[in-house]
Length: 375
Image 1 (cartoon, helix red, strand yellow):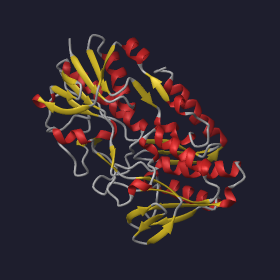
Image 2 (image 1 turned 90 degrees about the vertical axis):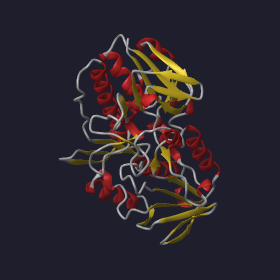
Image 3 (image 1 turned 180 degrees about the vertical axis):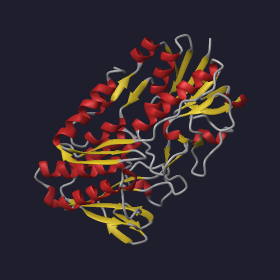
Image 4 (image 1 turned 135 degrees about the horizontal axis):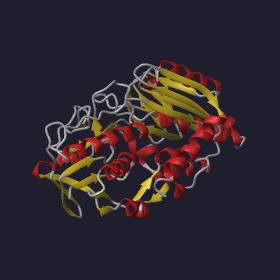
């Protein structure tokens, strides 16, 4: 019986577990995470407006584990031994015949004063903090922005910031108090959202102008204060700052022999194999993969990589050569609480559909459809 360990409980980890169980009914699969639950991060954007409550996004995995005969090991990864054949956790060691690393990424928090900002995608507490701060404000300036990892072009998560930006604008208008607030979008990139494609950049900036959202673009970040954002292009006031930094690898990678990219992620090939290690794979935000510099760090991409990783690991366990690759494609709906803009990008095409109410409801339907596999 093959023993497989999967690190993480996010999109990539759960997709890998499902795929592996389907391909290998007899495998002993152990999933390592602090808690037996899945947080549906894409819907964090709806917490500030009340469209979702925190508990709506927490999916207990007990039934999923039982259905797919997956053992849950409560704990956090800490190190690797024996060339990857032993995972060290803060709750003991686990031996394996194959390992899939899907423990996500880590935001780079080195800018001076970054303790004064809220990083929305850090989880439910961050989204709740945004909700509560907005409710307490009577007026003021709200600044939202993102940056990347200069050593890892793909390690960026900017899409949700556009959604928080447009969602907050829509919420304030619905509350009839938008005229009391100034909204500013900032980014060191002169064309924010360029990874979504040129058409998307044009559409996003047009939407900002339509909503009377100011921009501060193309200036390198220098830091923050409690009441301002500081860039090389100047300092501007902000009563509430939401900022998404670039991403790098997990701290526990430092206590391993995992090969790292210049940006700190686990280096992998086109089949999601970790370079130079036997039967060790990576998927999702933890990995650095070959591909275009616009390859997204998003749930859909993590799912595609996880499915390839599981198929290739299973092939190796059964004496075959790994041959599955993953498609590189970006699929998202930039939501604004009551409508949404559809964006799709592949190596050969870029599709941008105008903001429609239909797409908002499509995003909500997808949430239900995706989570039904785990509830």
